[in-house]
Image (tube, rainbow over all chains, first blue to last red; front, side, top):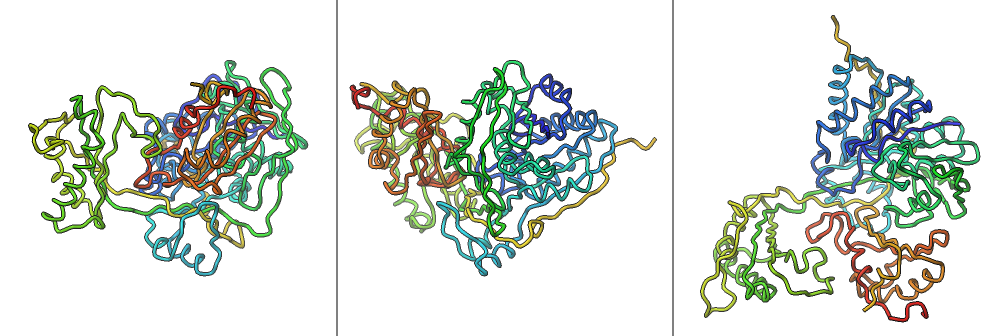
Length: 456
Length: 106
């Protein structure tokens, strides 16, 4: 039996320290946690930034490093720093060094890097080793070349290669959510249908339980099943809470694609072992003939400046759609006259917060409103132009009249200046797999000593 | 006026990667699941979400009484015209969908 302790769905989102201690008393074989995903949008991969604060990440990671040393087991993190670029791995290593100094601890550390040079992906595209996944955008050589960040998602083989070098801690770049959890059970001979299924159920921590915020869960991998239970006494795993997790962020509820094959849970069974533990069996692993890893890529699609105004006057609130339509037409004409630009080199959009801000043209309801927020978004090919255009529209956002024969209105600007420079607009432009001959081919593993003990 | 939310346990939506949205409708019973499936045909879904009829994937998860609907995002997550980074508010269109008063007889 292999016991994996998962402290939470992602590092930075907090976990119960009591629950973690309870988990350590059960003598797990490894602690595995995820560090990110694409969930928060393209900005993070575009800029190699973390979604969570450094201080919070340091605090949680230091606690896990301490727990690991206490239990004398490996600690692994996948998709470090939200997006899992090489820069994010380095960021996490710097945090680790700081934590080790605070703890007066030395460790053997492995890093696994997964950023992909644009040229490598272009070469793969040209040699037909890049395959589109469902709903993938059309790509070409130029789009790949323009990417500001490309990562490949590692599977278990890369974690296993590092684990086999007897390291204490693994800091990995982008990985599938399940890989860091499935790696050790698979290495120890757990059948892949059991290992991958258990890893998928555990990847979001206690999200597979009745109390998602409680964080810690424990998975026991056996030869013919896995058992999952939450470590916080307030939470329970039920056959419903566990099986429902297969639906989460997964377009197909029965199939999960991973590097080297896919998991099929069509015939899985979920049984309650107690009022808080569930036993699962029946997941099938289907190996693929070729080893493919998913690649994610992001590029800059323009630069943005936004303006927010608030409208409380009932005449304008009631006629807000005609007002923004008229304003937009007027602005496009005046930008043509003053800047010599037509609509191809910039875009102005007004979103009506309070009317259809979330759903836009899909909105079905039109209720009477007290006030409305107008979010103006200018997108242009340079930041300077986006700023210039936003400044140009400022006085009209403040005073533009609905009809020619009415007094100039003045709306509410919530702050000064009304414009906010948003910087580059990033967009995902790859949803493809990369075929490789050897799982370690496009990933770089380094093992080194990280010493925090003071040399007194 | 009866809405779908009045007849089911829960409806949630979320991105399944940057290019796909997936919606889970948790029904109360196998019969409710069948009724919900009839209501959520691809032409109704197409009208609600502005996506081609043939782009919808519909799954029944009998053990959970869940109907799952997955479809491509009109605008990829975070791209210029996207309004909902996590895709979690698309569920409201199904929550508020007006359904026949005789749901139990469908």
